[in-house]
Length: 296
Image (cartoon, rainbow, N blue to C red):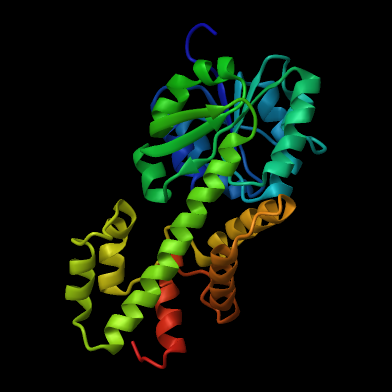
């Protein structure tokens, strides 16, 4: 494709909005759609085209990107009535950057192959802050030719990108990363509760953990949140529960034992039941303290 590709963005939520703004700022012709009309206003004011359906987005662009919440939304915006596949030209590239199940992703791929659409699965690792900064990590699988054609687009959205296979490998990789991230939160919450009951100074305990053998980029990213006990969400407990459900359903279909993942999912379920589902997933520490009878 000569020159800059025309790009369409379907889904302008916490991740899709800053990703769209970065693409527009980089000079891409951008057409946008969201089920919530007000979500499109900011980009429309900047000069982006507004479409009234995913089908209309696809008819106007070379590369269609979706960033949506779940399997149902992916089905709806891609292969559903007035979905992108109804308007996409043959050889168009469709990139889904959401976290969805490999099963639904495979269904979308079947439809893409029938219509001659190049379908890339490109879920991202990184929170809204990384989306704002254009420093997401992009995990891509699908047709290698399409991946190569989208390097400039990926370069605007992310700092690192990895091609991991021809089919749904990226879906499995994204889920296993979220499993490890969510389990790290549960482990940290349990350890901090243990230390607090033992009389350790809260801030010093966190600082020492962050400078110990168990330090990690994830722990470092959450240090200030934990010290301040301010659990405003970069990624909510409810969102993590959804991703754990995807992982557990996938594991069950392949007879893979996942006891630690299953237990951690119960903790996120407890957060939701107690009205804490909208907190950051590292807010598990508040739940663990409550269970232990510790007043924060």
